[in-house]
Amino acid sequence: MSHQSDLISTDINAYLAQHERKELLRLLTCGSVDDGKSTLIGRLLHDTKMIYEDQLAAIKSDSLKSGTTGTALDLALLVDGLQAEREQGITIDVAYRYFSTAKRKFIIADTPGHEQYTRNMATGASNCELAIILIDARHGVMTQTRRHTYIATLLGIRHLIVAINKMDLMQFSQDVFDKIKADYLAFAGELDTGELTFIPISALNGDNVVNRSAQAPWYDGPTLMEMLETVKISADRNFADFRFPVQYVNRPNLNFRGYCGTVASGVVRKGDLVQVLSSGKTSRVKSIVTQDEELELAYPPLAITLTLEDEIDISRGDLLAHPGNLPTARSTLTATVVWMSEAEMQPGRLYDFKHTTKAVSGNISNIIHSIDVNTLERRATSKLSLNEIALCELSFDQNIYFDSYSGNAGTGAFIIIDRLSNVTVGAGMIVQDDNLSRSTAAKQSGHVTTAERAVRYGQQPATVMFVGLSGAGKSTLAHALERRLFDMGRVSTVLDGKVMRQGISKDLLHDAAGRAENLRRSAYIARYLNDSGLICCAAFVAASREARAHAISVIGQDHCIVVYLNPPLDVCQARDPSGLYAAAQNRDAGDVPGLSFPYEAPENPDLVLPTDQMTVDECVDRVINLLKERLVL
Image 1: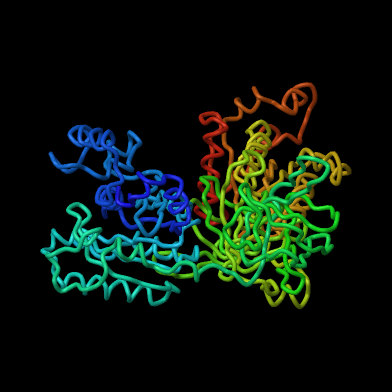
Image 2 (image 1 turned 180 degrees about the vertical axis):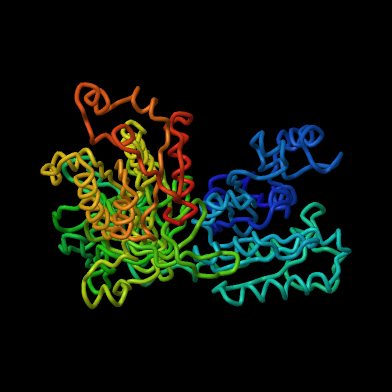
């Protein structure tokens, strides 16, 4: 192997100690589909002699069966281990590989290029200090190139190597290289990319990967491996602000109580005064213990156990810091959120948030704007879908102690967990620690605006008025629609004419005038529900055109959607859910719409549903589609 030395044969313990002291660099490869990310990693492993003979033999065999390079060795198979990856010749999930040289140790993540796997790329980048952005020299800067560059900078990666791959297919043309470099810089100029390095390579043949290529005499910069071995990453760490999240309290016997965790940032020494957050108690560091020895000082990312001179109540989730340099403490903050779930994020819904070692409950109270990672355009939105990114305001049920992500990634990041499935659905980076931005009107009056409700609920207020004969299915569909909206995370309620008559309209007769008055009263309630941001699922016979027109004017033409249910009268009579038709047979009833007098059907309903021909689910699907067309949802 490339990092072997004479110490292996003469003093294995000294060699292992030397190897352990090497600096570790975490990096990832990213870019568009088929840019050669997996092949590059395979080339790095191959040329640094980090592939064992049995692995190499297996790859040779697999190359003939699943490879994409003909009879040549397909080095991408070293990291594309899933069957689906080999069948399609793509990367689906993040694959991690370890290798080392004489100068440094590496953990490299191979991330997918497809847009649908953006969340996998963000996961792979979350712990990396350097990113290799691959660009196919034939195609230049692609959409995914921009997307992955933005996410890498968003996650605070300060070192980007732009590897322009497949230069062998472009005869290592300097003009091609310069044009791609210029195109990339034009986009990256809007981002805080930190250190940028451009290298022309051929991952398939190994040009400028580990060994310098003779095909590009015009390029006098470092090879990819030279860059990986020499890039300075220690300066990226925060050694100024001591933060120590307590992960575990170690109590092996009566004489020892230690607080275990990983130093997130800063430096701590024996005798330092530290403060416990959230209790505010202070004590001095008595000792800094590791598995092998006791240290005089500790820094990131060392995993240590601290003992204190005083007996203080400290538990998992607490944070230790120097008293003169404390993080921000607040229950509200602003952060950039990357959504990683198939289920849409809805503002106001309760989630669990894991911040350092502390778990708290809270919600995303407001989406300030989403970010189009391809154009960097900011857009207003009321929800987030898979792989979308937005600047959001968050509220928690208790204070958390944090720093901005740009200054301290250890205490500036969090993950979002679904409370029911316990699945991680999002990740966030705290972008500011000042007062939350609110609308001017809300600041001045304290009133909750219609726009704020729409953003919180992810919907526009509306009344869906199911009208038709008794037995047409109005109440059934109103409740079914409410169920569907609830399962979608929306806020709605049912307003049923029959229920109204059990309360607020109990005094009304069942004649035409009573029906009209019941509908009029209900219309005002529906308008109040809409003003509160809700979707009202209303079920009324509404036999008179005049009464319907008045109700629509009360609710508002823009907020009222009339759905007419028109099964034949004999179907309604057979159903007879209220016993209205049966009662009419035993008396001379003059108040049964459609039987005693004609039902005045709506002239221009928004939707007509023949409920004798459609199932409940089919009807609800039609209504949901209409609500989406009208931008209610």
